[in-house]
Length: 313
Image 1 (tube, rainbow, N blue to C red):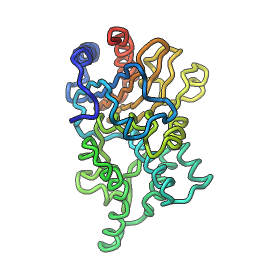
Image 2: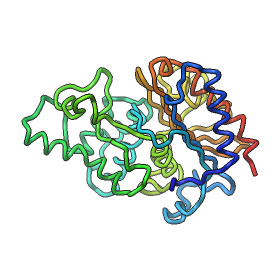
Image 3: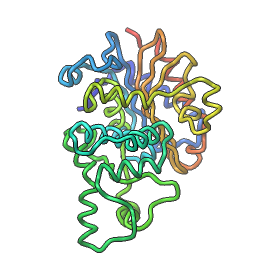
Image 4: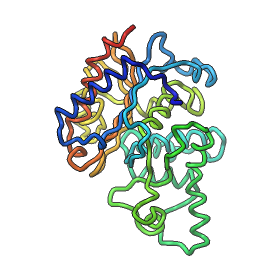
């Protein structure tokens, strides 16, 4: 069973939004998009600063819609959201030492989506480093260490995490040496996520139960995005224009992590708009043409926002 409750009204609305999207963007095939959408009815129990215990939080019901939400997709930089949570878990458990440099790397990994910062974070979390190919025995040890992040997320025993793979660094040009060998033949060991898994992780952060209430708040501060046109113009890689934030009204607040590469354009966001139901939206799109399309994700978001009044009970 998914962590959200399926709702007939939301299901119908979600299907209508996707049908309108396919009509507007005929290059988007039905198997090139995945979407998970949660709507928070009052009384709102997320973004409260961690007012609920984890047990109380997971007993609360949230309405949700999912289209291809269990399909494994290369997540690009959305994977950094998972590395952020893992880093805070390691810090909470004193598995790694906090430092100004780690703080800087976490900030740059999320705020600027820096691949170099992510490389350091993955090194610290796993005790591994990139470099030349290794002999078989040392490489087996290296792979065991690198998979510690996967073992952590599997230990949560969330069904949405059963098929995900989070163990690779993110790249500009691509992996070399032992990193390329770790990808495997035909890149079979690439990172992979589902929109449902991503939605559940972000839901836990927004709910204040990812690692701890305080650490969830620290993560939220990094995920906050400005919609100020002047700030967006000053930062061409703002993770708003061309993504979910690009379809929001100016008075909205958004916390998000986008992912973009030559074959993917993704975003995962929690949104609050005055007078409307808060919502969480994860959209994964694949294909070279869709990746280059800066109108696609904002269009879907605009349809979601337009339908929010009809979903209020």
